[in-house]
Picture 1 (cartoon, rainbow, N blue to C red):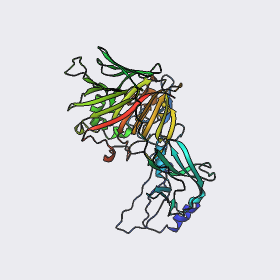
Picture 2: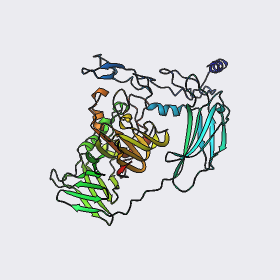
Picture 3: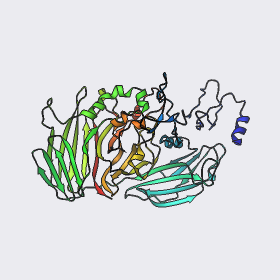
Picture 4: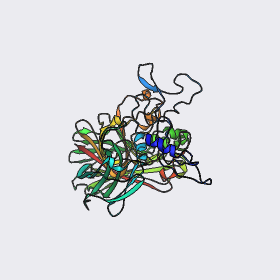
Length: 509
């Protein structure tokens, strides 16, 4: 603080000062990060403010004694701004950090870690007065969450300086994906954080995960009048020729699915979505997710599907007709192997004229007992296409942990960059999903349950686990909370055909 006071005093007479960043303090106060003298023709600017730091809400009880966080209008106050002041990076009730804090913390890093192609790391110290040698530096190389090698020490980079340093760890070559992490942590406790608190990190990925090939196991295909069954070692699956879709997956004697998986084009609307009228523009995608059908020719009971048998696999392809204008079809193909693995291929022709596409993937409905999530991807908090500055690692939590306590229930809990994820019950039985750079979500409520709730106490009892495995989900925006659109580069490109591939299988962990 004294250094900042001295800095401001010495530069009090400077007519133009530019703030490149500002640290959130309360609602909007900031600390000078860097100054630049400007001429009268240059633009004066500020940035980095957070509005608001804490959700402005009150704890109340509904008529049944259930606590929830109340906002404008909940007290019969008219007019009001509803939940407009509920966009903090801390929750209102207990001041706990919301998942948004993860992205804010990265943006505020005063040490920047980059890498070049010659296995050097470039450390840029953006502090005005503090050398990087006040921090410990830990460098690790991991393979799918397991540390292969670790190096600890101190790296001295002067304030407002940059240094290029060879990576002090040998990078394995040619046998999978490895993640290099450089992390700076506090050597000593401070007034604002404990010893060991991470202040900055950077990562680089080397290599590529080896594609897992299905085992060559025999399978049995049983053709019925209403169903098609496939049986292999320790699993049975059933496809409905009458209803359309995968209606049963039994593994280790346990039924794993509660409802047939369905193509999904919708995510729960965020406050930003509502403010910029996305539901108005994209409403057809919600209707398509809810009412698509394999039936064809205006209500006839025939199901649009085809079956192709191979030596060690069988393909079952369903055509889903979407109730959109213009009409669209989505083709969903399951390739079943004898070891229980199912490869999924989903495709849909371009649909740019229907409005922004919130998501393109598949929605699984499991019983609520399947409530343990483990994933190899970005984390530990939620990430999105435009909010993904997080660490690539292996994480695990309960499905309910991914339901953020936002003032108004909305989209939350998504995981970007997922290589694989398992959802199991307490005995370790469940599903494993895998693919390249998946967008993955496991929540105790469906997208439509969340859409229908204005407060957390309006969410229904937890009866199911809803898993969304997607090619991508559009960004969540946030330039402001009163109408700014998601940036074009963070939208799904619907001008051409959309294609999505992933795999799943039963597991016992």
